Amino acid sequence: MRSIDHLVMPFDTLPAARRWFESLGFVVAPDAIHPFGTGNACVFFADGRYLEPLSVVEEAVYAAAKDEGHLFVERDAAMRDLAERPAISGLGFRSQDALADREQLLEEEAGEDGLVDFERALRLPDGGTTQLYFRLAFAAIHSADAPSFFYCEARHQVKPDRSALTRHPNGATGIAGVRLSASDPQDFRDYLSAVADSPAEAHGDGSLAIPLEDGRLDVVAGGTSPLAIASLTVTVADLAFAQDFWQSRDIDPSKDGDGVAIACPNGRGTIRFIEDRT
Image (cartoon, rainbow, N blue to C red; front, side):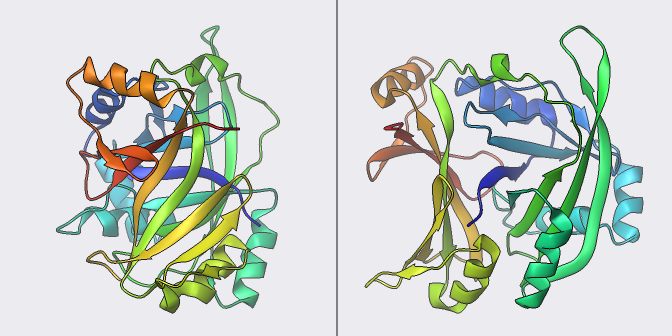
């Protein structure tokens, strides 16, 4: 059974992403640059998960990586080329061993051969820097508009202290789950079970529920793509407090089940907020 590590959200620019998340009451980390031309401005949570707003920051480097068949860049570029871009383009799962995860997926005919190894600099509170090392393995992808599922292994020994970055004025505490939409959820039952390493429970309405470690994937019928990430669910310490906070900033969330939802500005999709009951 997998655990959510982070979700990728493509934006045109990092300043635009930063302005939007800060307007919602999130603390946003300093910009970080990848060696393949993208950069991020992450939103970290106390439960160890995070959101990764992602932009192209070095066009020439990005184009070269794409030409070389860099899997992460290829998939990101395919999403950016869509007429109707999804707000959430990828879901990364935590990995202790990306090589083993790749082999497991290949055995289940749900994986890619390619890997991505990279390092990037981390700015420390004292002004210094250290290097972070990552290895990514990828699930197979069905089409250019399908979300990218991958496995993220942190290979560095340093444990960054991000506690100050997890104290969000809106009271956000973590990521509880992800909702996918599919033209026919049953078409993706075996694939998503393999990706999540967890059995899918079918409901009478045709939807699926796939348990994760401290979370869940829900797959509902609908949408304009065969498979897409429709929303992610963020927990807040006090939903009424969060709604008052947003109202003070002229932000009006819509009702969504036992929570509320706010439409993303970077494409098709929402962030759903529920009260943390753990």
